[in-house]
Image (cartoon, rainbow, N blue to C red):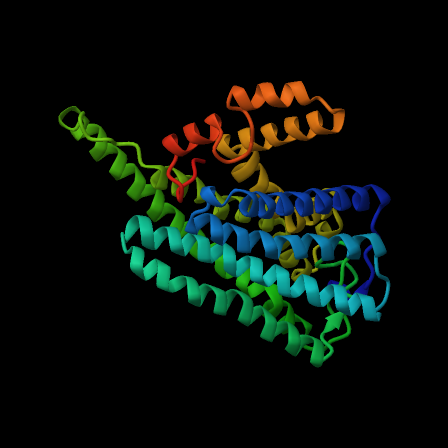
Length: 338
């Protein structure tokens, strides 16, 4: 295999800078998703709660990757093992939570079995935290985590390059679950997409005789948007899988700088991509964020008159204001708009 013949991949400074920036943006994006979930409890829903747990995994993943790329390890050390353990756990957990979101949406939208979906949440926690923890602890105890020469990473540590059974552990600590996600997510996504399309066609057909019945359903809109999580996952993660396969095939293309950068961005930017989709591109959350920023700017400038005017016009972020009342009238307290 290629990693036995030339066991060191040289990272250029430009590659490191780009991947570090991706890690930082992903960390901030995941943190913003967590903060908005905590800040506005009336905008919470079960799918967004699952998104919260996915963001926690992405947060630790981005932080560990940032440290690994910054250090650009050249040998196995204690902090290399620590970084590799954290990234292995959080990365594998992210795979499971991504599939959990898709499965939850499939059960609630296609199967219309809300009680089963709620019961599955407990299993999601057990699987998405438990299995990665067991795998990571076993890998660390058996000394399988360490320097991997950046053939299947971009500066960070993962499976030790000197391990005789490294291929098995690469599959067990990430690649097998990643490939499984590639197979499961498109099937669930297509089933959900097809079901939503049929529901919309049926609604359009019967809308003339249902004019007196409200047809706006925030849950349908919120869940429809959350199905983009699998698309984001596949688009970002596919580059690391391509590079992994090229490494197994001893292809020199594995050293291509563009592929290396895409690999680094893809592995580290899921939190940032989710933030763009579900915070910055979500009108109700984006509006509240801008309102909060304006209020913070006013407070730092000592502009008391502006704050009083904003409250009177219903633009304050506190509960009970005119803007808040209008939001509660438009949006269900448990089903945020997306």
